[in-house]
Image (cartoon, rainbow, N blue to C red; front, side, top):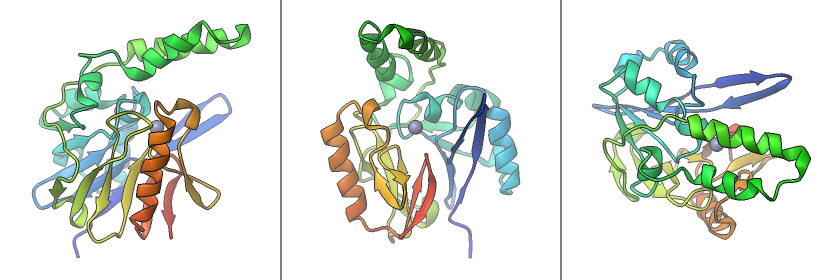
Length: 231
Ligand SMILES: [Zn+2]
């Protein structure tokens, strides 16, 4: 049987902090689709991971971005530069923030918080905003709309899962075999929970999205933070 998808691992080390992110590659009849691509500067690691999973980077036809955060779209501009044939997609709501037409919402959130931060956290706040000011925007070639279905990954559907950001999307298999949650859900212990509620732009909406995700009762949830979780 043709493979439906592969889960990649991007590992980042800063000081004694380690972070692993889990982008996914979905295989379709005509398309090979990467879902999210890591922080800025991840191109080499991405390419290495693709080869490790027997995927030619030049075979990628599309990059789907679940939302505008830098751990998801940070390497999009460098990937597009290296492989210009890759089409970039995101929801129509996220698109203007990713392409730089509108100021990134995480930067707006960081700037609004900066004055309220206690003195010992101001440097961290500044660093966070600086990271977003340096973030390279990238043009969205084709917006994605909720409920659109594709043959990727054995047959899938784009679903709207707002809250973390207003136009966040997730991808579910039509046969319930998996869901790619993005940041609409992370694994904590053995449960799916809202990712970093303190970063949620709309926490009530994020909770509703999480409930919807759980209700789909997929056999496997692939979370960008935390990896894969089988029911
Ligand atoms: Zn994230």
